[in-house]
Image 1 (cartoon, rainbow, N blue to C red):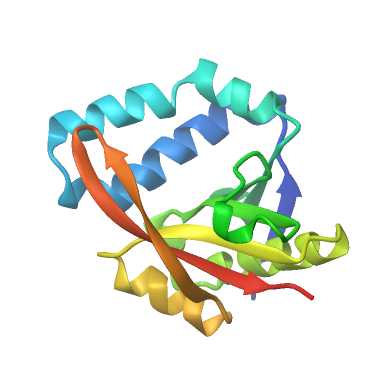
Image 2 (image 1 turned 30 degrees about the horizontal axis):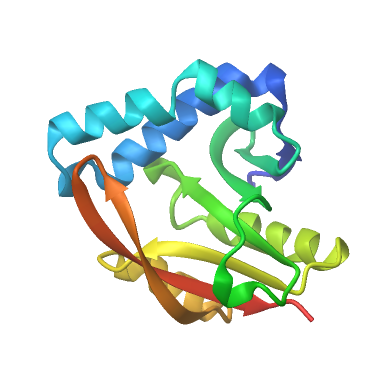
Length: 174
């Protein structure tokens, strides 16, 4: 029997579960590549209840949760507050985060979240959807390329005191 996948918008009632999911997925994805102190500090600063409540309350952010059956499996965060100079002539939306718990990877949950964001972006008149992805994450880069994203630049993401390079990738929606 196939397990159902449900994607729904997140709100303040989801604060605790989204905060835990954000912490867990970020740790699973990046802990092996970063110093423990930097990881602990990043998680404490970026995925605490106060910070996540502020993000959930910001109308320029949209969070969507993916459930596999009754289990929370992943999420995506879209935002419109960051305007890149390279996209200044486009109505653009950013995929700031897309994460799936390791236990659910390989089950098309990331693909479903990405498809949801592409459809939502197009339905709301966005011309371009973009994201930043760490240059040292070839699995994610290939995933986005399969969905038609292309690299259009780089930027520096500071993880603690460690500058890390991200590719900027975009997909035209119109």
